[in-house]
Image (tube, rainbow, N blue to C red; front, side):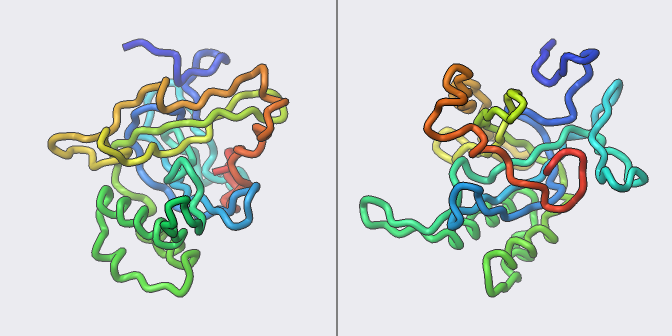
Length: 228
């Protein structure tokens, strides 16, 4: 089917950045990042890449300071493991939520999709930061798997609308990621009306929560020409 969703205006080339929708990706790395609006809240990001794209496509440099490392062969994206940050909290019904325990559950889910549950169970770490570092070593350069990516749109300082990607919550409707060749797929089918929180351009600069609040965090030091 013909579609313009992954094309940019300049010459019609496919964009090097992944957008919301159903896709096939692999994990390049995993990071744990503090949110810019709450020092007690964290995001777990999967830094992913699509399958190689043939034809007139030019991916971002893997390292803008070292062109010899070449370019990504597919679209790339940074995806939040959850639509909401991980934070210790007590719900209205008195139930206590542990940030660390929820992150551990998220890593179990990843292991069940890309493999490595036994190795995951062998990790012992004093802090959740160290645990996620070990998960990064374990799951980086994974095999490809199916995903559904949702998005919260945000506006940067130049007025361009960007996508803050996340995995929709697992529910009776399906799962946000699964093995590529699984029988009886339960992968969530992307629905823009459900999985994209659109930015109201009229209220973009007057909203009580600035759009910049949802801008992806600064580079983790990889030096790529897109901050992933």
